[in-house]
Every structure is written in C-alpha cells, then in structure tokens.
Amino acid sequence: MKNRDPATFHVKSFGCQMNAYDGERMAELLAAEGLAAAGEDADLIVLNTCHIREKAAEKVYSEIGRVLKRAGPEQPMIAVAGCVAQAEGAEIIRRAPGVDIVVGPQAYHRLPALLAKARSGGRALDTDMPPESKFGVLPARRRQSPAAFLTVQEGCDKFCTYCVVPYTRGAEVSRPFAAILDEAKALVDSGAKEITLLGQNVNAWSDGERGLEQLIRALDAVPGLARIRYTTSHPNDMSEGLIRAHAEVAKLMPYLHLPVQSGSDRLLRAMNRSHTSASYLRIIERVRSARPDIAISGDFIVGFAGETEADFAATLNLVRSVNYAQAFSFKYSRRPGTPAAGMEGQVPAEMMDERLKRLQALLDAQQLAFNRATVGRRAEVLLERPGRRPGQLVGKSPWLQSVHLETGAAIGDLVEVDIVSAGPNSVAGLGLGAEAGNGPGLAAAAVAA
Image (cartoon, rainbow, N blue to C red; front, side):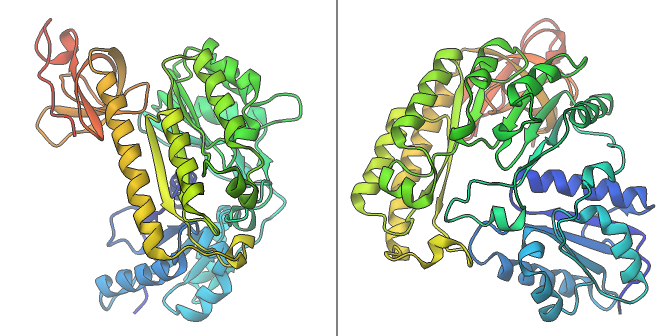
C-alpha cells in the first residue's frame, strides 16, 4: 500500500557532478516543504538519474524494483528525476506503475506541485523545459559541506554525435552573473570554503559581456571563499583569458579537467568534436606554461564507431604526450537517437574491452606517477570527511588528490600538510603544527591507497 502522505525523503543521485548539485537542490526544496531528510527507508524516494551510459533506462527500472522490494507492504512514493526522466518520461509512467512522479532536470523546481498531485492519488509527469529559470524558484541554500557545487551553465550546443546531453538538458544557457555571486556568497555563509563551478560546458559560460575568467575573478573577491574549481570544459571554449586566470588567481586550484575523447583526428571529426589532437595539445601546452604545477585530467571514449587499431594507437600516443594526473575512460555506448548510434563500423564488445584495459593501464600508471611526484611537497589540504581510522580525516589537495592524515583538526579546516607517501588513488600526509594533534610536531601519516 502506498504512503500518500510522506513525511520523510531520500534523494539518490547517479552520474555527474551536475546531478549531485541537482540532488542537493531537490533535497533543499523538499525540506522547505516540511519533509525531513532520511535514509533509504524514507516515505519518498527520489531517483535522480543519468542517461549517459548504456542501458541507463533499464538500470532505473531495476532500481525501482529494488526500492519496492525492500520496502515491503507499505511502499514509499517514488519520483524519477534527471536525464532518464527527461528522455523516457512517458515510457516510465507506462512501464513502472510503482512510480508516482517523473520530472526532468529543467523542471524539478515544480516538484512541490507534482508531489501535491501524487498525494491526491494521481501520477505526475513534467518533462517540460519551461521558460522561467528554476534557479529563481529554488529556496535559499542550506548548510553546506566544506566543498560545494554551484551550477553556472546548463545544456550543450556542441552536438557531439555520441552524446544525449543536448536532448536531455537542452541548449546552452548561462545563469546571470549576479545570481551566481549571490549563491556563492550564500554557500560560503553556510560553511563552504571551496566552490566547484559546474556546467555541461562550463567554460562556455557568458553573460554577453563577461566570460568564465571574469566570473572566476569576481569569485576570487568573495570573503571566506578559499578555493575555486570548474568542470567540465570543452577545448573550443578554453580562452586565453581563462588560461591567464590559472596563472593570476591564487584561489583557482591547479587542476583542469579537459576531455579530449580520442587522439585520432579522423574519429574526432566523426564525433563532431570540432578540435584536433594537435589543437588540444597546444591548449595543454599553454595551460602548463601559465601554471606549471597544474594537474591535467581528461575523458576518453574507446571503441567509437569505426575505431581502428591505428586510431586507438593515436589515443595512446596523445595520452603519453599529455601525461595525465587523472583521467576517465569509457567504452563507447550507443545512445538511441544520437547520430553515432547508426554509424557503420560498430566495434565488437570484446575488442572494446581489450582496448579499454590497455588504455586504463596506461592512465593508472600515469596517475600513480603523478601522485608519487607530489611526495615531499607541502600543500594546503581542505578536510572534508572522516577517514576509516579513529582520528583520521580525508581532504583534498590543490591537485584534487584525496589526502589521508591523522590530525586533531576539524572537518572544514584548511591545514598545511607534507605529502609523505602515495598510492594509485590517494596520498598520505603529515599535518604540521598544533592542529596535527601531536603538539608542535607531526601527526602520524595514514597509509595511501
């Protein structure tokens, strides 16, 4: 039997950091309606979905079934939000009778009205892309963790042939300059010391007069904000002003996530990426000239339609040329409705698996080498969460590494740390001074993973 008067809610977000931001905002919206946050036994379960990977819709139906099975006789209300909701809304209503609300990523500010309809026994569907901005309707930001996300740009006009984002998130839209500054100040007032600016193409942000570099410089002047990051960027929007900001804005962390997807110019044209491997490498060179200690991250697709062994070798060569601190690699996933889904030369799954294994081995080796190269450095670490051991905390270095250390400092503190050892996925640090928990000396280092 359905609980038609939910008092508690739980938001479960999948996929990208923008989904994480949307999940936080939906939670704040529901809290403003008087509902209390709870665990997976909540009266209202919101599944905030991602549509990027293969079989995304099937995974949503599987998750719906898991929720209903776990709940037993008194079933919660279920809302499906996010990009799968946008792409599959009517089908979800038809196929999943246990779902009460379906809402797309541009309409979740209407969640209270949809909830009211569901409470009355109806089923609610809203996948519109309304002209009014959801950001003007959402409630004020609530208490934040030390590191917060802030969406500044949504949608995409690039139309990469493999990607569903233009169809699920819409055209590129930049939030107003003043609204972003106001939200950033509210985040800082509520506890954030680091803000990551988010967008499908975040470096395409513009208000017609200013670009992302001017926005970053304005945020640099916000009292109490210690760190600024941004993701995800497109090579075509990596302006000279933004590159200069990496040299001139101390709060802008030395980390850049700049997806390239392939090292093969033939495949880049087929992907409609609008850049070449050479132009990408020139950008990396200019960024490193501006900020020599910057950590470079990227994204790669293995097995795109028509990929040959020569194309894949070009990708490996580009990876060796860049020498990444971090990177993410994925097997090509055919997304219905995208141009690439109908292209000839689809690569067999077993070949994709083998190439992905080779690429990931190279990327893993580079990440470990980068982490080891930071051993002996002194860095400021923002403490974000408890570690697994008593007295252990985990924070982020300027280069976005997870840093484990034992310290008497508190979550939210910025502490000076000597990096003393490195593993493939994290580094270990020694905290300096009294905050380390050992008086004026050094705290014991955690083991790096």
